[in-house]
Length: 166
Image (cartoon, rainbow, N blue to C red; front, side, top):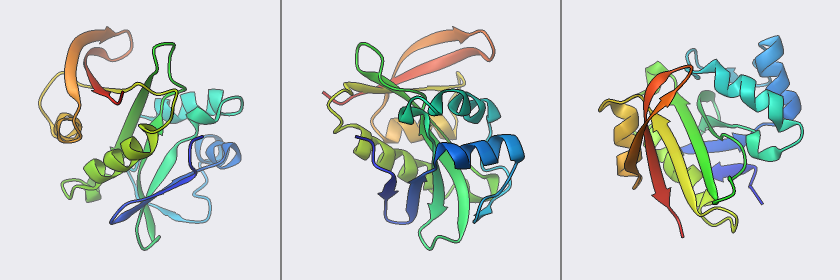
């Protein structure tokens, strides 16, 4: 079972409900906490989560808050349940004002730690643009290996990364 809150050294990742997700995506509401501008880069990830989260809790995102609970600085999520081989995809984003401080690496590491023990998960995958940048370095630091270059119909070329957990 996926936990609803993950604690790391400096961050709290808390899973929002489908009602809170609806408020964020449809109404643009900031709920009961401050959200840093630019906290998500790809609105499509939240739109997709909203579409499927009602029936499947794997789609509910974790908002990333500073440990003192003062501000939401990003998001990380599973992009659905594990596939038939046990691979589950993750995505993440950190607001521009908080980049370069290790928060993405810390959030991804915390999400991996919670995900890897789930019996249905055999590997964790992620995708990045096909270039060396902060996101690819985060994945490398967390133990991911680049396994392929793929073509996404909406985005174009992407690198596919994998972390085996079994």
